[in-house]
Image (cartoon, rainbow, N blue to C red; front, side):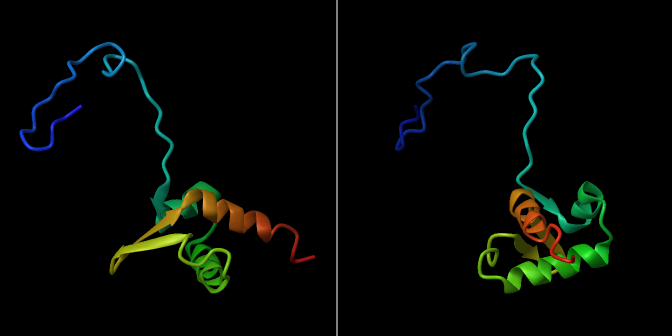
Length: 92
């Protein structure tokens, strides 16, 4: 716990609240659109087309990606995967 006004730490480090020499895997939530190409083995143009298509769909709008800068688009991995599953065999 930290007291708001004085910024004093009242909890000392212990084995329960400190990471020592253990390896920890943290699952990423967002990745750059270019990394989505690698992760899903899709071309850049296909990823861009799917992202544009998903933004037009009410179910995925404002959930699938975040533009944090003019040239940086972050893609939510789980939502993109959900979108890909919704497209499964629709071409048949």
